[in-house]
Length: 186
Image 1 (cartoon, one colour):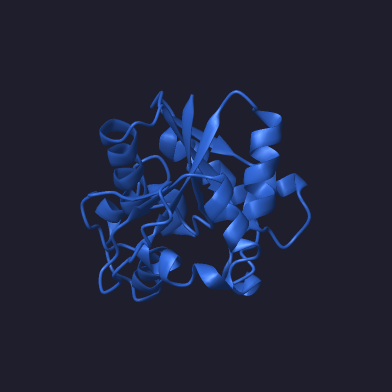
Image 2 (image 1 turned 90 degrees about the vertical axis):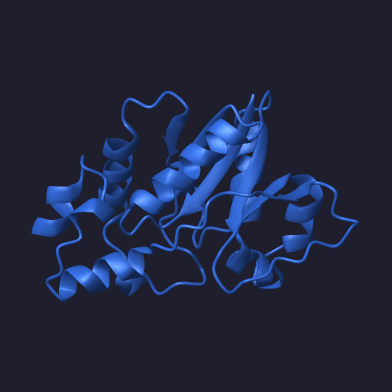
């Protein structure tokens, strides 16, 4: 099977994540999208994160019932901080019959040289790059396993969600119904 790995903090998961994953699963040659909940991104401050198990539960609740979505907590058992190359290799070793594609935004692509062993990622795994506002992803011709996808541009972020809630905004339609009340109440 062709699996698209969608890594993220999901702090919290929102409709932008779900709509993008839905598009990838329906319009690309991908069998499933695995939401990979990252306990600690080495490029983000840990103090801004909700508890990792709570984030995992929210992703599970948000994707329940959709057969092309799965959630993975593989990084919970890997050394921290979580590095993408270690995670992808662990997935490949655990599920050797699958082909794992890494999904990343154009913003991440533009800073991939900051990632640990990024050249190994580029050489070992296919990558799907989705559009992000103001970021132009330039892919050298030599990287034949990297593909820009023509997914709809959905500019919603977890930071926007948290800030809007702090300001008392009613953003109910930006959150999956399964977790809406949990997020708004907390």
